Image (cartoon, rainbow, N blue to C red; front, side, top):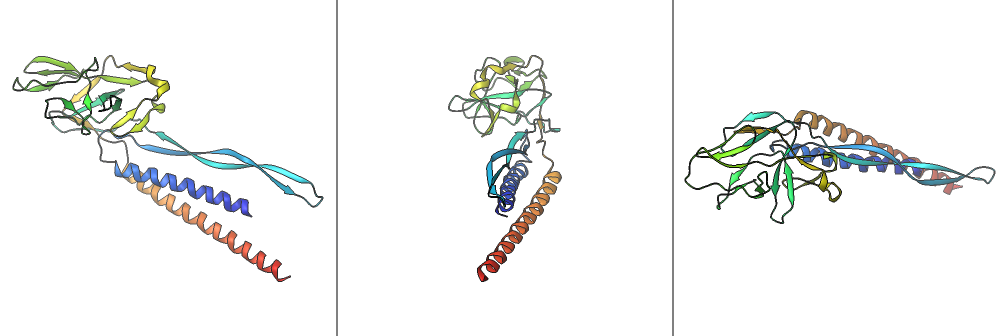
Length: 250
């Protein structure tokens, strides 16, 4: 009886985690380059339970507990034209490489950049956009219009300025989501390579790969499943209460 209650409670915990993942996706669905978070479930052994039979022998059986596994869907989103001077969209593989204030490298598909007060190209979080030699990209004040080629070469006033650093990760499933993008785990720092022939669209942005309609349907399914598990636990509780009253009466 109690084992059933524990299983339903574990299911409700997993559903709560799934609900949080869906809420995150919906809240970030309008963020350029955002990659949808997914939650899958797997069964793991949770120890053994001993039950004494009618002959006094203890029979043991393994119990299974559900565990949620967080993953990221790195599929590309649609690309829309914005005509923004500092908007970039990547086609195919790769990430824009940024450097945070603490020196950590951050990887993102969000190419909505801007120029700070020092004339440096930065992300909306203020992280510096890296060139192909991992140096800061700085515009020259009053020296002509800024433009970019499809390979990431930046020019200003028809004079070469820098080339965007477009890097790919050998095992993107090991990337850790961070503020402003993803960071590489300590064991994967050597698995970063520079994309040789990137395809970049200047004046465009990649949209998130989140389908708001699909996420809303998932949210409804989670809510219904949560309610069903809640009712099953209530039924277990009612049966257990009646059993205690019946046994107590004798």
